[in-house]
Image (cartoon, rainbow, N blue to C red; front, side, top):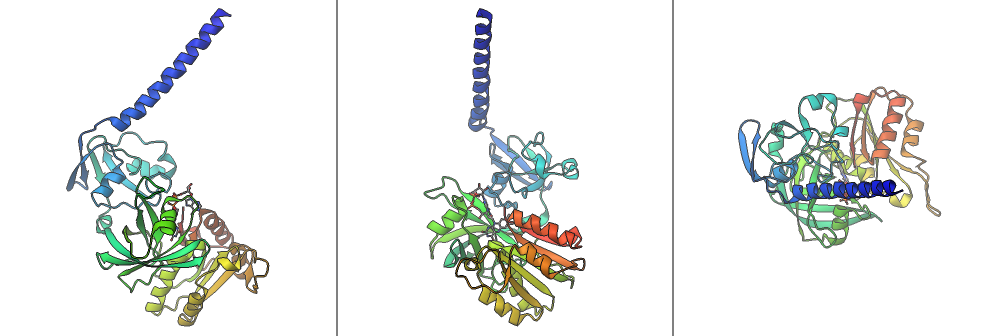
Length: 368
Ligand SMILES: Cc1cc2nc3c(=O)[nH]c(=O)nc-3n(C[C@H](O)[C@H](O)[C@H](O)COP(=O)(O)OP(=O)(O)OC[C@H]3O[C@@H](n4cnc5c(N)ncnc54)[C@H](O)[C@@H]3O)c2cc1C
C-alpha cells in the first residue's frame, strides 16, 4: 500500500516536472534573444534581421512577399521556398504539404521555419516583382446577405498589372476584435484593363479575422494595404471548350476573366455553372447576362440547390455538380476551371474526372 502511494507520488512529481519543462521550453523560445541572423537569398542578396520570427514574417517585413493564404498558420501550404542551410529538421506541421521530391529539394514552409541562426534560401525570381500597394476603399456594395464587393482604388503604386484569375493578399490591421495583423488571400474580381482598380468579392466568415474587419470596420475612404499579385489560376492559351464551376465568392476570378475575354474579343466556348443554396444567394446575374451578350460563346448557368418558399425559380436545381452531370455527358475534350470552397472543388473534380476529363486539365483555386 505504501509502495503504491509512493509510486503515485513519483508519477505525479514526474508529470509536473515534464509539464514545467515543456512550459519552460516554450517560454525560452519566446524570450530567447537569437541576436542578428543573416539570410542569404539566391546567393546574391543578404539581409540581416533580428532572429526569432518565422522566415515568412521576416521576409514580409523586408518587403519580400511569399504567397500565403492562411496568414502563417501552416494550413494553406502556399509559402513554400527552398531553405538550403540552417532550417533544422522538417517539422510535423510541414509534412502534409511536402511531397518526396520537395523534401529532397529542401523545400520548406516558410511560415513554419523560424529564423534562429543564419539561413541560405532560394526564392523564384518572379516573386521579387510582387509589390505592396496602398489603396483607398472607394465603394462597398452588398451582393447577398453575407457577401459584399469591395472596390479599392490604388494610391501607391497607382497602377497594377495582373493576370485575370490571380489573387492579392489583403492586410487586416490590428482592430478591436483582433490583436494581430493578418494577411488573407482574395481573388481579383475587376477588369484588368482598369489598372487603378482592384475589386474583391468577400464572403463573411463568422468570427473570421479579415472578413469581420472588412464587413464591420472597413469604411469607404479608409486606406488599406495589400500585396501581390499571386497565383497560377488563369485560362490556358488553348482553344479547348471550358466548363467553369464556382459557388459563393468563388465568382470573383471569373468576373476578371470575363472582362478580359470581352476586352480581347475571345471566341472561346465556356459554360459557367454557378451554385447557390437559394435564389437570394445568386448575385451579379445581370452582369453575367451582359457577358452572354458580349461574348458569343459564353453561357451562364446559375444552379439553385433548394429554392426558398415563394422564390420563383425556373432554372437548374440541385447541387452544381449535378447540373454539370445533367448537361455534359463527356468532358474528355473540355478544360475545367473551379473556384470556391474545398468541399465543392473536391466534389467537382470527381464529377469532371468521372465524366472523362484528364486531371491535368482541371485548374482550381481552393478558398481555404
Ligand atoms: C487563393 C485564394 C483565394 C481566395 N479568394 C477569396 C475571395 O475572392 N473571396 C473570399 O471571400 N475568400 C477568398 N479566399 C478565402 C480567404 O483567403 C479567407 O480564408 C477567408 O476570407 C476567411 O478569412 P478570415 O480572416 O475572415 O477568417 P479566419 O480568421 O482565417 O478563419 C476563421 C475560421 O473560419 C475558418 N474558415 C476560413 N475560411 C473559411 C471558409 N472559406 N469557409 C468556412 N470556414 C472558413 C477557419 O478555418 C477558421 O477556423 C481565398 C483563399 C485562397 C487560398
